[in-house]
Image (cartoon, rainbow, N blue to C red; front, side):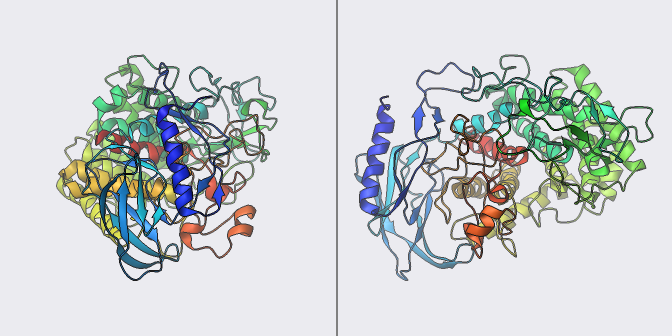
Length: 614
């Protein structure tokens, strides 16, 4: 197969880099440009990642965003060097011509990596083109582009990730090439599927049809508390810029209908979430079951359509019920222009769920319930109450929800002191109160709180040699990449609220970490960058274990460095690691290298924001 000219040029530059760096190399997937177009979400500028390549990719102390930089945006790199003096650098174009030069800024020891570092800032160069390299002290970076369209396809791919994650539907190989498979967990599945799922013994008494939704992560469980934040972030990416969302074509079967593609994908999850609601007539009517999982853990790999485990509903929880209320309330307003009857039903579901949660405010999911699926335990639901009340108020304007918002102790607290995630959701309500039209009396203060949170994250970034808005005490957390992206969501929202360029600059700089400017020289997004994650923990994207199976789809985020190293593989290989170094691209390292819907939702939100900056 003949590589397109652009890729031939890129490979030639990699060979040149290897000659300059002259260090041991590792394998990486070939990326072939797609010149045919035709599929939704593809174009002449898009590309697909294939699982194997003989190419040898050099390591290098010059760490850059391996995808690229916007010509009018910030352009920074981090260099590992013990030198206490500035180092000379040169920016070279595709032909090897020096187009900019200067000296690095010594930054000393980086606490998150244990590396001695310098920072190179070449933002003043505003040219554009493909396959640039940055040479510092005679050592070259991996190649990158300077292109206003650098992130356009990433937003599409991060959102198109959700279609192959769908449960209860056959995945069409014509829509997701290389990922076609039979429907999982239907009535035909050996274990009985999700059409008539009984309760876990002793947990509850329902038997429900809970087909549909997205498989949560590398396992085949479906969790309301993780589905809630995931679908909320997809809908928020629409609310942030409806016109841009309407123009963004995704790879999914509903493409071409009257509803924007991102909302079609969101609807697949919303429909599942509503099925998890306890039906009328039950003593817990209106509550939502916490999750549906297998009775026991399945092995790697396992095709969803071949799962032999019995599926089980787990007991309702207040957290799950409030996730349902919040997501359904948001869905009611975003679907109203496209399907009024559906929107009205979502609002009814949301109100019923919120009322049920008020009746049962302390039904907590235990941390110990982790057989066959993740526990997702949560014994503090004050944040979920705040989020649900906020979404219901924005969608209805009703005083009872406004009162619930303003009387919450979280309303005037700093909800951005730590990254938000599925267990800490108050920030979701705060961000929507700040950006979506409403008449809350102290909305100006709410908006300022977002700006204040963003300013703190910018200050954190300034103190990091790698420019990430993340410096937790005690090491990096599980899913650290998503936490970084959620912090960038706050910074991006501050840009939307104020228009101040420093927030746009901050988001673009923060993306550099995710795409290669980090201590491992690793892009954490499959198919993006010369050295990109491709072996995320998954039961069906398991090419590392079975060459007949695919790697994860292009645009899949890896969880990233995790100082706790809960899995045996990472624990044995990385014990004692500095926070940024606690990662390995191995399918069995579920604590550092899993994929999840909520992590990809954060990538989708931020990547569509940066795509819009062009």
